[in-house]
Image (cartoon, rainbow, N blue to C red; front, side, top):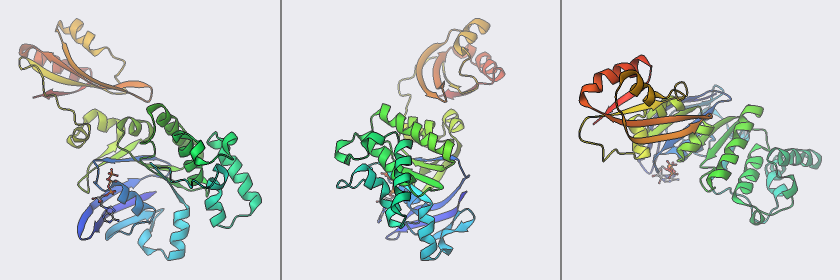
Length: 320
Ligand SMILES: Nc1ncnc2c1ncn2[C@@H]1O[C@H](COP(=O)(O)OP(=O)(O)OP(=O)(O)O)[C@@H](O)[C@H]1O
């Protein structure tokens, strides 16, 4: 469990993290999103003690990082793996040597290292590339090697800082799949910083949205995407600039629980109301099509339609 309480951090007198409160349960998949410069990477670096913080608490399994000695910090970092956008592999070393690096630093014997590296090469599906150098690998393969290296010391926590941002969408999804398998099979807590919202939905259960060094919203990913708080809309940048000026525009949210209901057909059939579809914002989440629809209806039909949506337990929002 990672517990962050009223955490504050500044650089050169400028506040970067301004009272962060987050609880990340053991074995969970947690996301941090926010605009560039809001302090996401700084927060990740505080979690693995690469960065000190000024005030507040940051406890891992009940122990505040600030209370640890140098030696204890070294052991803490061993329990926390990290992967980056640029993979950070050593170009002069092959896959085997890149993965084995942390094991060598910790003084494991060659036999253990050999078994562990082969085991990890199997986990990441790159056994046949064990002798290749990074320049002979694709971006996705390089990130797999970086993940294997981060797992070498059996960490409890894996921090991913924009780990899929440099990859094409399909390769990014494959890395997400690998991270999800690692979380599920090894019980490793995943903390992911990303600006790719589709990635967030597939690799996180809970999320905090950072704005100007503070948490603007936090909660279950699906709930956040359903309720679409202002902080999320600021990130998505969606503006319904050209909505029809006549009638009423309503945004109807389709969640995991109701995404299979043909709500527009129901409104038309049950209420005899025509709905003009203005916009759609749908994505696949946990195998279901979720998101929102914007429809335009006449002023007279408004109260009838929203009562019906309430009755059908759909969340809706009247757009201005
Ligand atoms: N070592 C440092 N010294 C001084 N300022 C720093 C240092 N590290 C980060 N900053 C500043 O702290 C702020 C937050 O940086 P950080 O990298 O945490 O943001 P971020 O949300 O991860 O951004 P991005 O999404 O662009 O990676 C930025 O203004 C950055 O310039």
